[in-house]
Image (spheres, protein in one colour):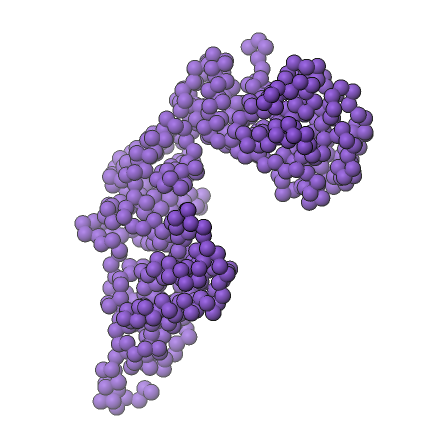
Length: 587
Ligand SMILES: [Zn+2]
């Protein structure tokens, strides 16, 4: 390997145009130079390897260039540019604060600041990893930053903006560098490959780009590593072998097995993965990410979150189309649970296999069509709680769009008076507390959980400006009661609404505390209508409902025998009769 230069250095950008993935930012810098509106201090923030130092150097070179090009780039030909490119310019000084973070180093730098440039107009001081400076060094630096000479420009770079003192921040123009997208990195890698005479499969470059997590420097060093390993022929296979990445082929195959309810095939695929020497937890995380990717590419709104190579994107789209949203929610939940339990499990392989079996049952236990048509609100997420006890196979044939009611006997008897008391107090309604007449719910009583009911703001047409009129507690109550009045013929709902008034929180959240899953179901049933009504009445499109289901166990203790009997009597006239007839003394 004679004259081997690592690609990260060889392909370091030398013009604004060649900086990958930071177009907006480089344009702003160019415009500032063009308009002669230069600040004395800049702060470049962002993750490692995204081009902060490169941009600082290009900036330094361009402002000193004697004949800038019409589109605002350095000419790379004048004496100043040549001095920069040959790294012999005195107009640029770099300090790496990570290794030189003391007062002495900063003092040496400050001394340099006073000397005006020999050639060109500006001296540029680049301080890398500026957050690493010691407090004393920071203070020494601050004085210079407050009153810099005309010719001095500071560019401070950091990966950790939050560690920069406010006194420094306020004196800098701040530029936020973003992670470079997978597509941009892959495209640049393809360019480097073509320059180097290396053959590379697009999918392979896409995987490298993903692995680099937004940093070009990392991407290029992985690229170099694999290029030398695979003798100038970078294939998808060589990349996944080299980076120890599990082939996404496995995830696609497994997901197909889950959708088909094919337990044997999923277990065999898992065995294959283990045999190849892959760590199981690595596999679980990868599988979870696969579901996540399928989910985000289902909806155009979340598509920007989807970062895979173009070549494979179509396959994701195709598989995503076959996955019901509910399936993906539950699958993510299951993989997450498995991941969390993995470390503490005594039988890790069994744990993973159990997860695979559960994943296979997700679609077969609920009729796909009903699942797919479920509204994409947040409601499905809360029902994920159900998956711990996967429903029995019998439901396969005629599962209704909502789970059917639990047998009444399964419910603790004590709970009923609680509902009755509330319901009856405002309006005598014998049927109100009988769950059979209410819309069915399959959820077992859960300990205190919060359910975010309406997150509808995305659904409102984008063109109309969203209303944000301040909401008052009084106004909220009034609107709430107005809605309740419109449903006075739906007795159970009416009673629930009129006995459970919302409390206004955080300006537009109405929190309703309820005690039973029945009330929860009643309100969930009408969530969209109620939310729409409130938003309309209150002229605020950010109004949301939140239900707080209090654990029935907590409630239980507040009722004594007399309460229960009183409630039973109100609920069932026969009990009153019985008490009278039998002359019982239980008053
Ligand atoms: Zn020049």
